[in-house]
Amino acid sequence: MTNPDLKRWFSRLQNSQGVPAYRLIADLISEDIDSGRLAARDRLPPLRDLAAALDINYTTAARAYSEARKRGLIDSHPGSGSYIKGHTARVQPSHGTYEMTMNLIIEPSIPTLIEQVRDSAISVMAQQDLYSLLRYQAFGGSQTDREAALLWLDQRIDAQFEQTLVCPGIHSALLGLITHLVEPGQVICVESLAYPGIKAIAAQLGLHLHSLERDADGPLVTPFEDACKAGNVAVLYLNPTIHNPTTTTIPIGRREALADVALRYSIPIIEDDAYTLLSESAVTPMAALAPDLTYYIMGTSKCFGPGLRSAFLHAPSKRQAQRVAGAMRALSVMSSPLVNALVSNWIKDGTAEAMRRAVRMEAKARLKLAEQHLGRQRVFSAPGAFHLWLKLPKSSNWNPSELAVQLRQLGVSAVSSAVFSTDNNPPDALRLCFGGPISRGDWEEGVQHVADLIDQPAYLSSLSS
Image (cartoon, rainbow, N blue to C red):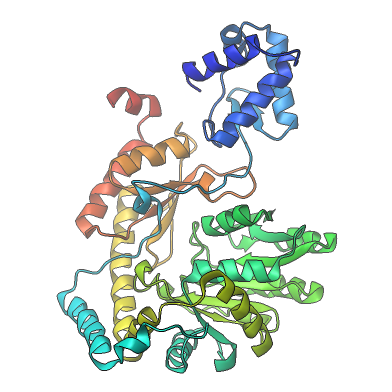
C-alpha cells in the first residue's frame, strides 16, 4: 500500500459516522479491492504501522485484519505479514498495451509462406461472387464453409455435418453456449486457473463460477463430483489440451474420470480445444468420451491468427446445434461470409496446415531459449505452444502482478496469475507469451530480462527505475 492510500483511509476514519473503526477498515479494504487499488497478493502494512498511520490502537488494527480475514479478503502468515486475497478478479477492458496481455500466436517470417497466404486470399476474391460475400447468411456457415470446418475438426473428433456450426470466434461461441446452457442461480464449474474470457463472460452475464481445485494433471475429480451433488451445476468448462495459462494437457485417465462424473449427473461439457492442433500428440477428447454431453470447439486463431475470428462448434446432436445457432444468431447475427471464405480456402488448399507447422516449429525453438535462460525447473510448457507458465522461486520477493507490469514495460508479454485465478488464491507465477510481432532475437532478449528481474530483489528494481 502507498502513503496516499493510508491518508485516504485516515480521512475516512476521521469522518466516519459511528461505524466501528475495525469494521470500517475492513470495508475500506473491500472497496479498494473492488476499485482495483488493491490486487491479489498485495501486501498490507504491519499492524503497528497501520495503527500509527491511522491513529488507532494496536488492538483495533488487529481486529480490523481479523474482520477482513473473516470476510475472505486477506490472508495472514506469521513472519511474512498480511496479503490481499480479495474477490475473484473481473477482467476489465484493456487500453494501450492490449496486445501485451493477450496470447498471440507466433508470426513466422517465412517469405514463401507469406506469399502462399496472400495468393490464397487473392484467389478467393478473384473467384467468388463478391456480392454473395456481402449478404446476410444463415447462422452456422454455408455448406462449403461447414465442409471445410469438418476437415479441420476431423483432425481431433469424428465430426458430423449437421452438428457443426461455423462461429465468429471461440469467444463468441463460448458466449452463445453459456447463454444457452446456464440458467440464473446455476454455476459454471471451472478450474482454479482458467481462461480470462470465461471469467469476463460470467461477470458480464451475472453468473457464478465454481472453482475446482487442480493439480499437475488438471481439475480434481472429487471436487467436481461434490459440486454436482449440490445440484446447481449447469456446465463444466474445460480447456484440456495445452491449457491457458499452465500449458497442462489433461491425461486420458483424468479425462475419463471427469467424463464419468458428467455422465452420471448429466452435466454438459464445454470443451474449449483452442490449442489442440499445436500439440504433437493427439489426446482423446472429452467429445469422444461423452459425445452426448460435449460441446466441442476448435478454431483457427491459435494456428493462423486471431484477426480471423473463426471457430467451429460441434454440438452433441443436430437438435442442440439448432438451439445453439438460435442463441448465437441473437448475439452476433452471423459470422463474416468473407472471413469464412478465406478460412475455408486456406484449409482446403493446405495453407492453414502450412501455417500451423511453421508456428509449431518456431515455438519449439523459442521454448528452448526460455529453458536455457530460465532453467527447466522454472518453465512449464508444451512443445508447439507459444506460451509458458513461469513459477517464481520461493526466494523471490516479487509480487507476480508487479513483476508482470515491469516486464511489459520491457516489451515482454507477461500476465500475472491473478488474471486467471477463480479461487482468490493465485500462485506465485506468470504466463509469458512468446508470440506476436516479435522475432526470435526479440524473445531471447526478453527472456534475459525475465531472468535478470527474477533474481533481483523487487526493491532494487524500484530504486533503479
